[in-house]
Structures are given as C-alpha cells and as structure tokens.
Amino acid sequence: MSTQTKISRKTILDIKKMKVQGEKISMLTAYDYNMASLMDDCEIDVILVGDSLGNVVLGYDTTLPVTMEDMLHHTRAVARGAKKALIVADMPFLSYQISPADALANAGRFLKEADAQAVKLEGGEDLAETVYKLTCAGVPVMAHLGLTPQSIHQLGGYKVQGKKEDAAQKMISDAQALEAAGAFSLVLECVPEKLAAEITGLLTIPTIGIGAGVHCDGQVLVINDMLGMFERLSPKFVKKYANMSQDIKKAVKAYISEVKEGVFPDADHSFK
Image 1 (cartoon, helix red, strand yellow):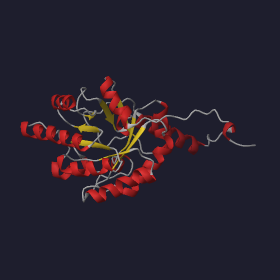
Image 2 (cartoon, rainbow, N blue to C red; image 1 turned 60 degrees about the horizontal axis):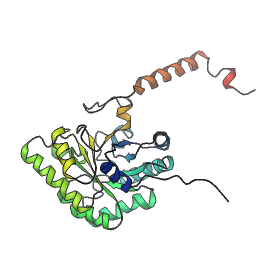
Image 3 (cartoon, helix red, strand yellow; image 1 turned 135 degrees about the vertical axis):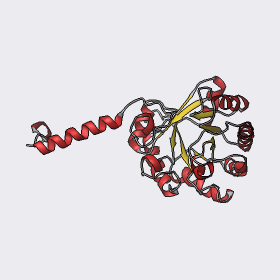
Image 4 (tube, rainbow, N blue to C red; image 1 turned 90 degrees about the vertical axis):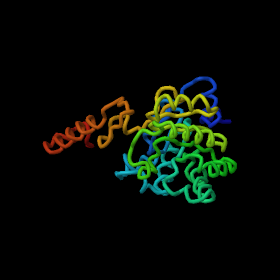
C-alpha cells in the first residue's frame, strides 16, 4: 500500500480564513509551468494566471487582444506546475461581459479544461448578476475594482481610481454588491490607500491590493514586474525584488561571446 501523502491545495475557504485570522495573503501572477513550480516551492498562497500575459508574454500594448484560448493554454501550464497554491484565472475581455450565460460557459472551461480553482472578473455592481450566476453554479469568483485594465479606453488611461468623493462612494457600493453576489475576494487596483482601507474594513471577504496600500488583506504583483524582467513599463506601486533583465542580458552576451570565440562548448560540455 502506498504511504505517499497527498499534497493539500489551498481553497477559497483558506483564503477567507486568512482575513479572519489577520494573516496577510500573498499573490503573484504566473504564466508557465516553471515559474508556477518555483512559486509553489516558496509557499505562495494564490497564483493568478493574469491576462497581463498579453503585455508581458505576448507583447500587446493592452490586455484586450488576449483570447480564451490564450488564457486556457497558460492556465493549464500553471496548473501542472503548482499543486499547493490556489490558482485563479483571469477571464479575458468579452468572455463574460456579453451575458451571464456566456460568462458561465467560459468560466466553466477554466475549471473543467485548465484545472483552475477560481476565475477573476473586472467590474462593479453591473456584474453582480453574473457573479451570482457563476457562484451558484459552483465557480468561485474573485472580483476586481479600481483600475480595470480591460476598461482602459473607457477610463482614459492607467490612472488612480476613486480619488473623488462620488467615485469613492460608487466603489464602496460596487464592492458591497460584489460581496453580496458571492465573490470570495476582491482585487483593488490603483486605489487611494484610505479608500482601500475603508473597503477592507467594510467587507467580510478579503481584499487583495495592487497599488492600493498596506491595509488590504493581501497583495498581488505581476511576476515580470517584481523580478525586473519587464522594462517597457514600471508602475509606481511595483517594488523590484530583482533586476533579472540585466542578469539575463549579461548571461546572453557572455554566451554569444563564447560561441563566437569558440570557447563554448568546452570539454566539460561535450561528449567523447
């Protein structure tokens, strides 16, 4: 008889419990098997397969061109690499906005075909019906307010949201509606610290901040940003924990030099 211990994966109940216990939630994006595996070894709580892959992996200017097939492909890879973290998949533009029925059909694919445990949607109270329909069908939903990249043209650019009183009140109302509809957590992106703290205090579900201050229940960053791998854009809220773009360039230049000079491969890297 096998004595192998089954690896336990974090669930949405674990994430909710962390808020109750005052334990901060760690979340990062990943888009491939290797990075997801490394994060899992480090005991990350949540891995988001973000539609930010459009920017940092596929080279688009926005997240709008990202397709369902793109997201399913990368979510499958992440799920093969991470066995302990909760895996949340971003639903791409127009995969959930057209109708609740379309949203359910597409969201279900992430759980059925890509082994995600939850999906993330951008939007406020107008999406409450969709969130309710998904959660009733057994699809956990992470909501997203503030700077919502899929609405970048409507927002007029990448700007802090909720700075004016009426906008702040609307965000509070949206957050409460999403919680009531069944969302298990809420991402707050580019939101004033005071407003994010107020929303965090009002909700029973955890908030995950990105450019929203320290009072959120957890934090998320794009892995390429925090590792210093993406040089095209550097938002104020990103802390770079490494400078891998320079390290990679240095390594590639060394390789090119050794190939040109006939130094690589040497005896240690050749077969006799």
